[in-house]
Image (cartoon, rainbow, N blue to C red):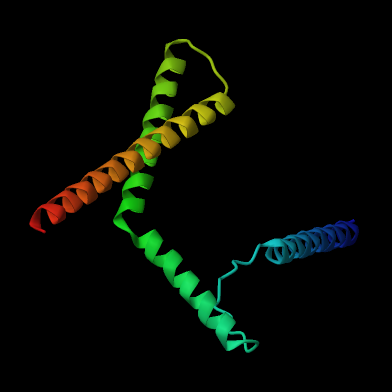
Length: 146
């Protein structure tokens, strides 16, 4: 009987070892699949074209102009005003929702977008009015000197 029990235990141990090995291989396969599925980060690279030198210069100038526009302080101010208005709008909606008014997230996002657009428009118009007033003052003072 001892031999039968010993053989039985050996067979059970071998079966358990095979199960563990199968689990490990399945885990390894899953891990490999995840690694394959993982999205790679794309990095923007500047591409040099050898087609036309004039075209290249024109593209470089336009990209430089866009970069300067983005770096302009007015753009930063306008975007900041919009962001602050959107955050304030979202906070207001959350407070009213907590008080019992229920509205969907779609409505909340639309409201935040409208608030941001309105704030950005106000900020931009204020800057334009200031620029017009400054130009008018400069033009008015220039005509007086003549």
